[in-house]
Length: 74
Image (cartoon, rainbow, N blue to C red; front, side):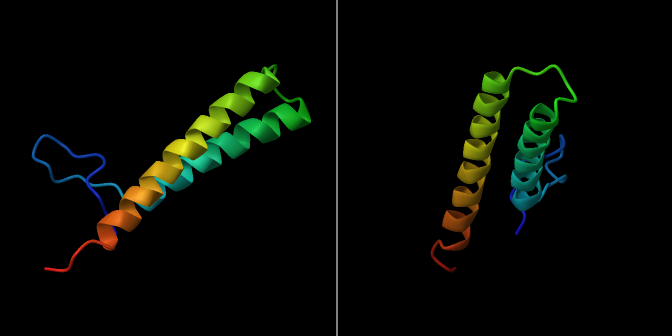
């Protein structure tokens, strides 16, 4: 399923919502791995908080997609 999360001026460019939610989770996971391995001088609490917020956003996108696909059929 593709929802118009990102569109151009003509409204034709669309990004699959599943790709966006996967990207958000991937970024958060990568940040956590960087903290765990000590590769970057990142604040652990900040990274944890940001990762949680990215996961929440990804969850909201997923829920919106499920609600959209579960809606009444035309």
